[in-house]
Length: 189
Length: 259
Image (tube, rainbow over all chains, first blue to last red):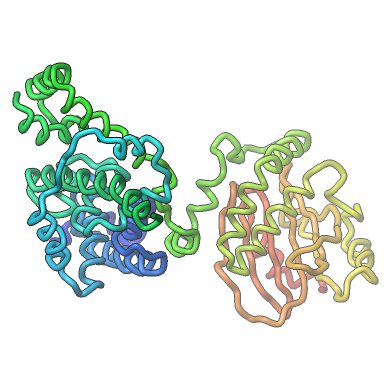
């Protein structure tokens, strides 16, 4: 790891921590938001962010980019998957299963109109139902407002993959939102 | 553009990730094709729904506190227009300025308290007490440049006998004393002057030998803390840090005056 930062010899540590404070600390909300959506649990999310911030501090010298948020979010994502000791590929199977049963796009239906009045609680549940590769891409795009390029950098995927995942995630979310009430209704009857 | 293409590109179109040519082709297709336009409408509504702030999980305070920098929080919480001036101030100006600081004080006192550390809250109390003392007629309970008037004045008002010294020969004339409260107890406050600046020196008995960081800067005030002979001291002023250090040295080293 190159440690050729042009730091002032007198107090490299204070310069380093000041840089960390101004660049990385403002991204704490973004880090927690992603961690929370990945872990889907308050306490786990805090653990993930705590660990990710420690890693960020440890490897801060290797940060030469210009977007600390993208850098930190990539660390949060990696931390989550390593802490879970379960590779993201595992949950990919969920979405691959889904591909075996392609979604039927039946155009605008009475159900889709209910999307108009989607409340936060329903959306939260629907998002949490998505497999994590689809959930993370939606969270990064819609909640963090990352560009495709930034999402590609965070997840280590090609932009084409990001595009197709995002399309799949949105279709899947739409299905979750429109079909769920129908099932509930069926149970009611 | 076919509908299949449109289904593929509608998301990139929503996200403004298409180049100009594709974007224009997409817009034309949406004008002509009702089905694709409907799909576009649903997804853009879904996007809006996802933008609801309730879905965004902000970092909890506990986490934020754990990672908030030790020094910069209080400084950044203070709006810049109220940063104290270091130039010599007339009394009236000082009082007016103190009032301005007080207006902002709920913000920064809370910010200081949030950090929780005991010593920090003591410093915060000292700062706010100093600011309060600069308001009209709050500065002194006993006005005297004579230590032999000031010291007896505290008798019966405190459960200890404060050390009182006149440091006029060092350029810090004693101008009076005051009862104050810090850290939930009554303390002695001695008031010294340096040119037009006021220095408040708080003291109270302590058991601890621990001396925290000797000098901190808070909102333009310099605060120096030390412990000597069972007494805890806090000196605070808007004089320069070097001047306040000189004052503390003078107070600590002045063996000529009996305690």
